[in-house]
Length: 108
Image 1 (tube, rainbow, N blue to C red):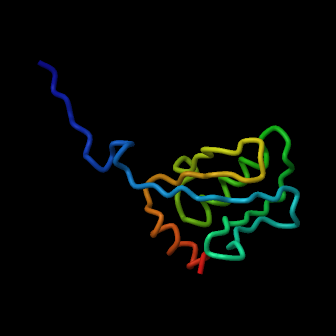
Image 2: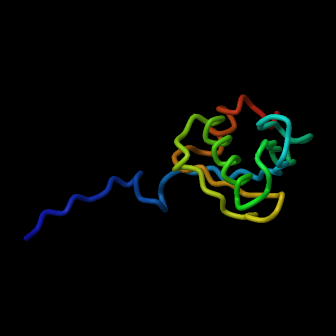
Image 3: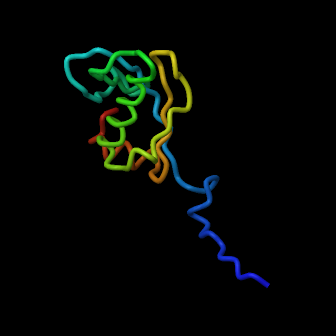
């Protein structure tokens, strides 16, 4: 009988903590930046220098979110809004509260 190693409970994708972030993206900006919305219920606003062509702005957004939160790019996934300005990004491995804290209370 082959030995099977069970994955730890935290490693299972359904159980891994994650943060879903609503972000409004502005491509072709002067510089890359991730800033808070006007109110706590407003989405984060991201500005990237990349143009909205062939997914370049989405790739830049993923890189910006990963850098801002201090996680690898492989943990950031675009869930919704591939061709829209309003997007939902999932960050695996951190909770929403942890994302909030890492962004320096950007929603406060």
